[in-house]
Image (cartoon, rainbow, N blue to C red; front, top):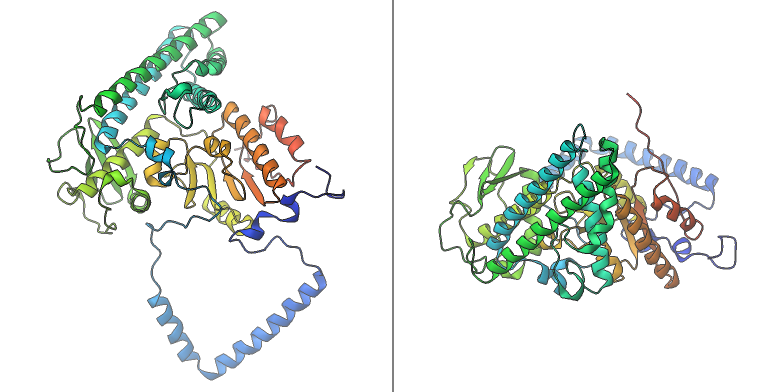
Length: 477
């Protein structure tokens, strides 16, 4: 691509993304700074004259009208969800792949998710025990989680190359959404080895042996979960193989029980416990109302804002309410059990508003129904995210050419393999958009680790596409 002063300019320069999104054209430069200043002065003078005239006429009437308008305006609702822009990828529940990934019986999904949470916990404890016994003073903080992120990224990437699609392995084999289980996951063993070495395991062979044992344990747990899923689908195991809308039986200890507190909603099932705030509950309920799988039956009603507390079995006894709480429980337990906190930067509300206003950003590439700011987003777990509006995994959507135009925010997990693959996917998307003269923008948040491969790849891209970099440094205490 020629530089801006050459014969050809990038389409993302000549047609910035905000020109064709919902954002105001705030990036367009003024042709005359002095003309702008004069216009502002003239406008201010005219505005002052009008204000003086209004004050002289009917100040009391104006105040009364303003008060009436404020009283008539509806209060903001925490349950409202932003609209999805036309250029954003479709929600997964509108695609064949999304419907195929979601467990048809929400009660089976709950039982399977409880088993998966226990499996993850066993693998994590095994890793921590082996690391301590091998000479590490303590297991590396979030070492297992770091490996799981990297291993699943490698596994999913290999599956897509083999034509397995999102959530599927080569040859049609279905991969576990959270536990690495294939040979491709072995590509990330160096992540475990490096963490163990830094933690004090001096014997390299011992560190490599621990890494292999942990990977083998995860693969065994994933195979056991796959067998459980088949048994449940066949009507065997602890859950009935009926549609999730079949709620004629009373709730049992195996079913999900919801309890409202003053500021939170608690969900329990099979000895597992999750909790979310009332505001988040209302938002997730609104997302589910819009994207619920057809197999879940009737649509739930709008959430009430009552402040009562206690066991809500009677209130939540309808088939629609049961289906929603089962899906919600599976979603919250998945994100709780992977221990994913601390792997991404925290992007505040003001930043999101600025991105929307300045660049027209309205879609998040790495989010979840729990923390998504916009009405359109990609999530890591299609099976539990799809009923709440996710468009699916970022990399799977990118492989399908889903990012053709528009403005996107990307805040990936701070895992080397994930960030590296993200840059590759974005470069391909930008190249396609440039060839088609389509506006495309990515606002990316990554750590300033200059030795990471993603930075080495991003630098040459800055010479091909319009690029700006902002560094944020935390002040030392």
